[in-house]
Amino acid sequence: MDCIFCAIIVGAAEASFVHQDDDVVAFMDLNPVTPGHLLVIPRRHAVGLADLDEAAGAAVWRVAHRLGRVVRHDGVNLFLADGVAAGQEVFHVHLHVVPRYKGDGFKLVVKPGRPTRAELDAMAESIRDALG
Ligand code: AMP
Ligand code: ZN
Image (cartoon, rainbow, N blue to C red; front, side):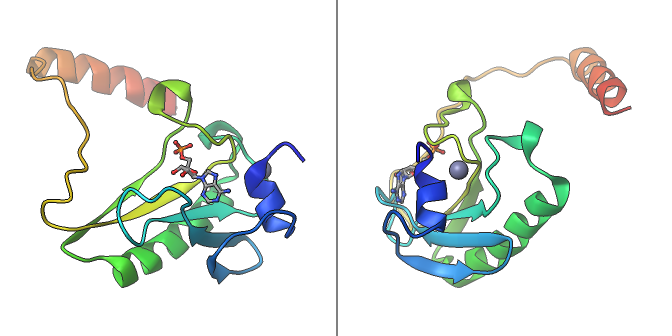
């Protein structure tokens, strides 16, 4: 089986589960960014948002929301990487739930600089058009 998360779902690879239902499973990340780092995944294989059924996405969110409340320490991040450019390394869509601790040092590095309102408006218009 070439998808490690599908292997986890069928019991062919080990995982430390915190939740399992008909649509979603959640387990401990093998290389936690912080203690308590979880992954929430749909049972049905999807690579990313493009092939993820909206109901499955909502089911993933529901479980991540609940788990986020449970593992939140000083804060919590919910994070999804779709595509290599976004940092995706496992190509079975997953939502990270990362408890945050003051001073834990985890951060996204953001390029400084702010677009103009006209640029934001133009971008908003093209996204609205794409939404249909
Ligand atoms: P991403 O970069 O968003 O694709 O994240 C993939 C995540 O999956 C990383 O945080 C890895 O530590 C985690 N991971 C990879 N293989 C396993 C595994 N067998 N069990 C649990 N977590 C895993
Ligand atoms: Zn899979």
